[in-house]
Amino acid sequence: MLRKKHFQKLADIVGEDYFSAEGYMTHLYSHDIAALPGIVNDVLNPRAEAVAQPTSSEVVSNLLKYCKENNIQVVPRGHGTSGYGGALPTKGGLVVEMTRMNEIYNIDKGSMTIEVGAGIIWGKLLELLEDEGLSAAAYPSSAPSSTVGGWIAAGGSGIGSTKYGGIREQVVELEVVLPDGEIIRTNQLEDAVFTKGKPKSFFGGDDSFYWESEDSSTSNKESTSLFVDSNGTLGIITKVVLKVIPLRKIKPLTISFPNKEQTMGAMQAILRITRPFYLHFITDEFFGMLKEVGKAPDVTGEWLVLCALEGTDEENNAAASEIVEVMSMYHGTVESEEIAHHEWDERFYPMRIKRLGPSLAPSEVYVPLERMVDFIDHCYRHFKGERMAMEGAVNHRNEVAVLTWFLDDERRRIPFLFGWYRSLDVINIGIKNGGRAYSIGMWNVAHSRKFYGKEDYTKMAKLKQRTDSKSYLNSHKVFPGPLYLSARIGLLIMFAAAFIVPIVIMFAWWLAPSVLASYVPWVVVNDIASFLLWFIVGLGIGFVVQEFANLIPISVVLSIGLPFLRLGRKIFH
Picture: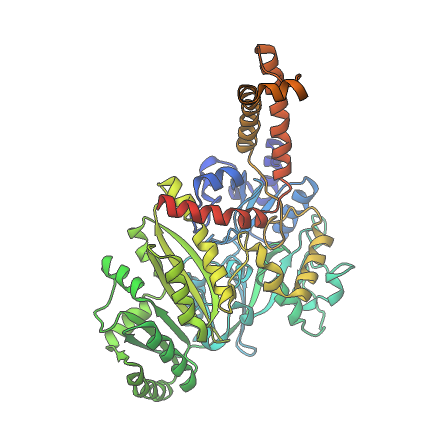
């Protein structure tokens, strides 16, 4: 836990201008894009105690060394544009916000790579690359506000992933500060670092000189990939080497369809013809919501597919002609160029429908394209009566990264609480239809072993144990962690038990006095003294219950709680 005595030291490490423990700052950095029900906030208490904004890898190293020595929880953060809880504090502590590490260090047109600070915004990076006649092969739909390091830590696919793969396929090398403060380059790690020994050190701490390695050892792509999708649990990413591609022309096509069967069939047909840069769809219900907010184009059908082709004019026109010829087989209407460019320009703004909520409950899962019709039908049956928007983009593995949005109102505390299960159920439905979790964060920890695979998960766990045995760095993410009740909830449990115990005893004497008199005559509440005695016993019982609850992993709590949330939603919706 952070105490006031730590504040000045942390400020000295990061710089007075880049440290704050002010309430408005800690509140700002205690949320991500997803709104949490009030009671979940009360139970988990995801509230930062201070915020640091480092400007160099050395500063990050010294922060982590100090925090580890003083048992201070640390949560690395980009811009918090994910909704999986990966950037949420779970035990207070220090949020390390990385957006000041936003420099471009090197562009190598020979190897077609770029090295950048992890805190650079994707939108800014794309603009700078465009000036050089280059582009990122893939970037997130949240590019205007999300950071490069944030997307790498959370993982996933985005715009460009249909052709070039997700962020995992774009990362060449990472500079990472491990939980013990060591700064390493991932391509120079040996496999032994995940089992024993120490990695090659680039920076030893306060008194050491920072130096660039001249080591020419072979690239270890496997080691680099283990830090992708790791949600900042294995270390804080400070620098990134990414693949880049030549800037090519984009030709968007928008095709409308009458139903989901034709839509999914047409998308599979497009992939047989060519590999688009981006292949994306929205459902008729999403289209209807866009109509309500005045952002829907005037099209024939209400199921829309955006197909963005990349290449020379000749290549794009040839592929477009083949696609147009085949679409009539699926009752598709190829809309005008104006509409196509409108949809391409809108690719960053799926949350325009939020004004209908005013809250959105998001969820994301990968589903094989050939199973999408079954998945959509399953969702419609399961969430009957809910307002659910759905969109999806195909990745390089012909999986659809399906993003669902449920309209809700977080100000209605009880219905919003009971509706929280929907985000988790979308993932379960996707898995039942041959899919997999999109990202892990905190809410999907139950899927960690399957998500990473047994071998990689074991390596990650061993590195975590070696460098961060107490899990002070982004605890409860990726690796299961126990429920950590807030002090307020703990006191509530204790005092509730303190009142319940004597009341239950009085009720039992009223209900079955002869039984109690025969077997436990000493269990009685008949005056103030005896009430106070059992009140104190109740406090003790409440304390034991609270401590027991703190041993239960959050993933188990979610699994137990889901059926009750579903039932409650049916009652209160």
